Amino acid sequence: MSDSKIIDGKKISSDIKNEIKLEVEKLKAEKGLVPGLAFMLVGENPASKVYVKSKGKACEELGFYSVTEKLPEDTSEEVLLAFIHKFNEDKLIHGILVQLPLPKHINEFKVIEAISFKKDVDGFHPDNVGRLSIDVDCFYPCTPYGIIELLKRSGVETKGKHCVVVGRSNIVGKPVASLMLKKSVNSTVTICHSATKDIGEITRQADILIAAIGKPEFIKQDMIKDGVVIIDVGINRVEDASTEKGYRLTGDVDYKGCYEKASKITPVPGGVGPMTIAMLMKNTLKSAKGEIKF
Ligand code: NDP
Image (cartoon, protein in one colour):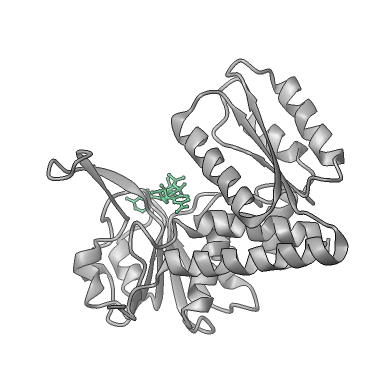
């Protein structure tokens, strides 16, 4: 039985992917254009390998062209930058993604800055970050973009609502706050972080609460008000001897405790998580179509 309280990220991301697939088929048939995405993976980080593999799989499923450069751990910054310059010039490539984190000897900021901001489908380039903060067209970082789509497609009113974001990272907290502040979304935004005093006092005022903290079940029932919409970005592994793997995944929100009071809530897993790749594909499609007015 479907539960209208639950914001189903699995279903919404699958709808988005189906829409993209149809658009790609049309683009191919009408213009002979195939969206292209280049991945760069440096080293052997197991989580990074899994992420790049699933992004490559999504490319296959949706009919994108993709290239993956797997480079050894000791790759120099110079070599990586040379690959980026090559992809910047490649007409078949509309999006470039360097999987983070990079080995310590490589300057991450320098690498991100080297990607043409017009192909920066991760939305991390300072030009895109700046453009987002002054509310002009740009690539939005994928997880925050996914959160906006979850709210939109679940019919959540954002105009004039108080959105409290807990977390101020460059990949989630800050960009999602900028997106909620955009004229087209029109929320009033408060951002909390580890030095915020009495967080509960602030989160209890939220009409929309976005938790991106990285601390299992940090948001408790007594920290929210009745009717709040909760977006739980957290993905935390907690030990659980009763499961086969010995652990389970949990969000930054105490789901059981907060479910009753919330008017809508994202589960973990199956909420924000599946949206990230869908929005990466959406950004690449937009890039191929020249839809973003740079
Ligand atoms: P970061 O560790 O980069 O940032 C965490 C933020 O939470 C920081 O701003 C930190 O504050 C704040 N914070 C930490 N402890 C507290 C506290 N006790 N009270 C208030 N604020 C606190 O994490 P990310 O933003 O990268 O990720 C957050 C969560 O989202 C993680 O669980 C991650 O796994 C998940 N995630 C999920 C994604 C997906 O679904 N696809 C994508 C990205 C992340 P301060 O700045 O002061 O240190």
